[in-house]
Image 1 (cartoon, one colour):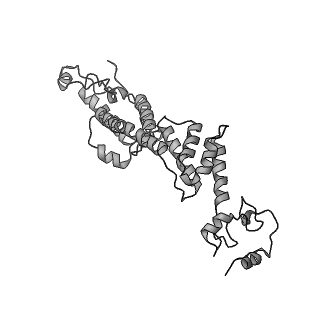
Image 2 (image 1 turned 45 degrees about the vertical axis):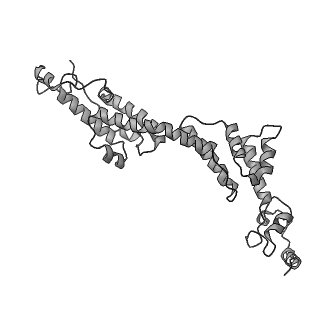
Image 3 (image 1 turned 90 degrees about the vertical axis):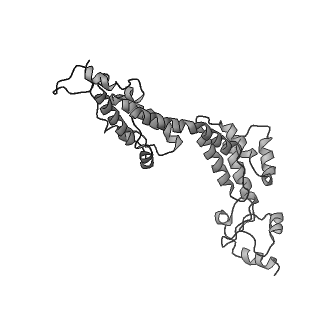
Length: 272
């Protein structure tokens, strides 16, 4: 039987993503690693296509001359062991140090590979359930900027995409709106029950505009609120721009000329 030669994988190992315990990395790690092992010419030992010959077969096999280079893993257990150790070392080079310590003593290479794969695949279903819950059961916190809620939903949708169960843009839009707190009921119902389907981008723009129009304005010092005026009075009056009085922007972004007497006039109108 022709002797087997093994290709050096040193230039290929950097192309394999380091497996660090992240399930997102696992699929890419396994796919690329199998390619490297195939190029090395040891994949059949890793996937158990070629089982280890018995030690008794070694003694019955015709010996090889010392000048022959290569391996005969089908007939010689020592050659099979050598290739298994070579493949095992290659796999360990693609693992994060914590995983190297955890699986460092697992032999042969077929057991090492199957142990790692089984550990990750066992958690795949549980991870999918968690990712789906993070998306479909998320609830909006009205005490933080709406941008954080938008980012949270988008990240949850992106995480689902890594598990190949990505929701469509319209589903992301519906989740974004229906997960809003009841304090956002007015804008939520307006968008959800709109006669025309609202796109994700339009929904995000509407929520950001709604937040801006309902947020107490900033004063000239950058402080939110209206000083001695009560919060309830501020909400009822709905002041807009400090400079021009219009809603939808702050005085720092006002396009109209600065009114120098505005601050003194407003100060005189506020009871002491």
